[in-house]
Length: 300
Image (cartoon, rainbow, N blue to C red; front, side):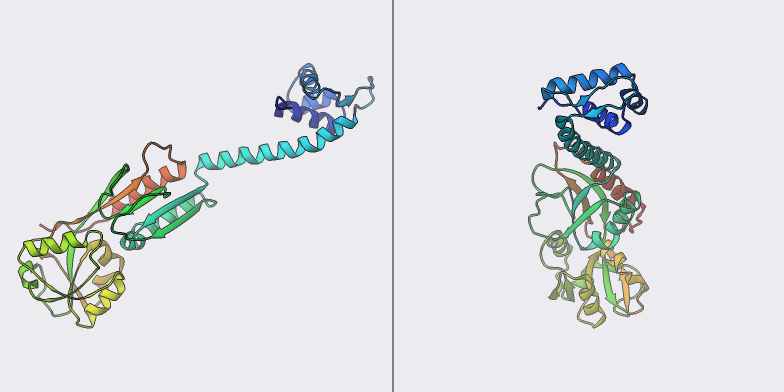
């Protein structure tokens, strides 16, 4: 029974529905002899006849075995059609993709990626998870955004350099760049010491600035609220500032720093040695395009 071929089952269904080998051949685009050979092959595999052939103008009729095979054969053909459709949709970019992200990318880059994927493939299933662990792992994710290279065997693409800027309440400093040493001893609100934050704070110390961190939060909006309230200034990357539209807030000011701390680097990672789905490959291309269209400042 494992030798039953779908084309033989399709020929049987066509004959049963058309009532003759000749009309079935026309429907399938075969010669009548080809259809006869297919049914003969099916009957050899099954060990019995599926049609009674009265001859002449009379319609062929299903045998009891043929009735059983026809019912199950139609189910088999329907499943094969569903499989073919699923494969076609997968190749076109449909399917599921799991993406790991973090706050700044979620606010600025990822919405454009998700929107374009959904516009191109409305049936795609996009699953997002937002975490910022100290030691990120790609695990079962298809793609992982992170501010820096992650450890382990991964492939990656650098998306952009994300410069650090100073956010203050209005009137704290004159307009224009602020010397880093002006932050020495000044109150500052900041992210927790994960991801790129320790490197940035170490860079401040090397430049002679030791701000007094009075509050830490992972939530950008909370930090901006504390800056507005006068708790202190914040040194944050451009993506975080741009995503919150800080420059349009009359209560806040954005300054470049002199000298500027090294920017954080935004990367997109994926697992190596695996054939990426068309949806994942397209997501990578879109992320690269979206990142290239951004225009972060380039502090000297």
